[in-house]
Length: 193
Image: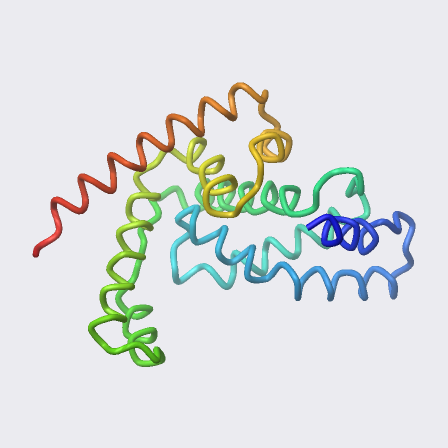
């Protein structure tokens, strides 16, 4: 893990890079963080039809902000803060509640999986349950929950990336865990058997 952090810092560490150096670094950043950005957007309940556009918007923001990146800060929490602001801006722009859309995605996954169809369907149902429970969380709590519980960042990293006092981050995480557990229980009891 320490090797990954030092590699990350070396990859980002050239503050006055020329256009060609910046392009090379950006290509590596894109390759190594595409999945992380996409999953973070999805976990923040970005609408499925807009995931590709939002992912592209995040990387546009990364490219613009990269010259100002502080290499002493952890890189992925910094990217997560850009993901969160992209989602917030998207919601303001659209002024509508995001909805998790699983129908066409479910069909594609069921057709492309190597699992037996019943196993694939069960996995999709569990994944859908988690995504719906995440969608029930307040976005401020969800951001901390996703960073810590699903993306594996520490609470101090989440607090720094989200510009929160450390105790506020811990409090939001505690409340989000309770809300998430309750949402899972509620939705599981509502599902037909």
